[in-house]
Length: 214
Image 1 (cartoon, rainbow, N blue to C red):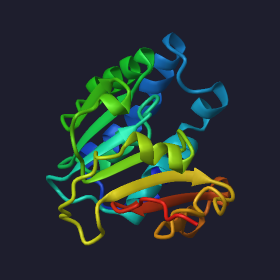
Image 2 (cartoon, rainbow, N blue to C red):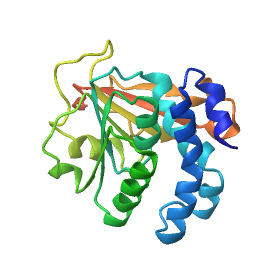
Image 3 (cartoon, rainbow, N blue to C red):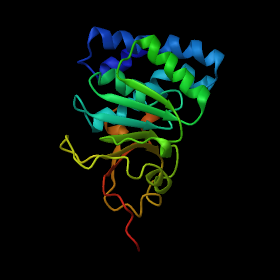
């Protein structure tokens, strides 16, 4: 798979956005040889397993210009960097506690000349800001994750959908989400035809996500 697959699903990209998506492969292959942040198998399928998967969030929520998004546990920059390319007028804060991963993020951001991304090397609990949405890719079970990001979501929403968490997860989530009665689950197989997405989902959890006691 190459960048052309991205263009099949996202048809309104500018020439600059298409160029940035095409640059991703060379940038990650180069930096992955220096600092291993993506497995060899995954780097060979970068556009499927990382880029398109990240953009699954955009199939569920279109971020409005001027809004703010934090990517928690961004690793090598996913889902934050692909989303930042797609939404150039949205401010993205990419957070990871591992310094070498944030170094790669910074280098890729510089290579793409992305002006809307702020990489931060810290634990998310140390980030003293609030955001419209918080995104992530399965860095922890949902009860743990909601504890980490407590108090970091703005109360006032500018989107039709209430501010909250958009979380990329896979497999059976019934037990993990049992306490979150207002969680909404979206199957990425409804958005993308590739077999990889058969079990992949986006979980949306609105601001008031405190688990109800049994």
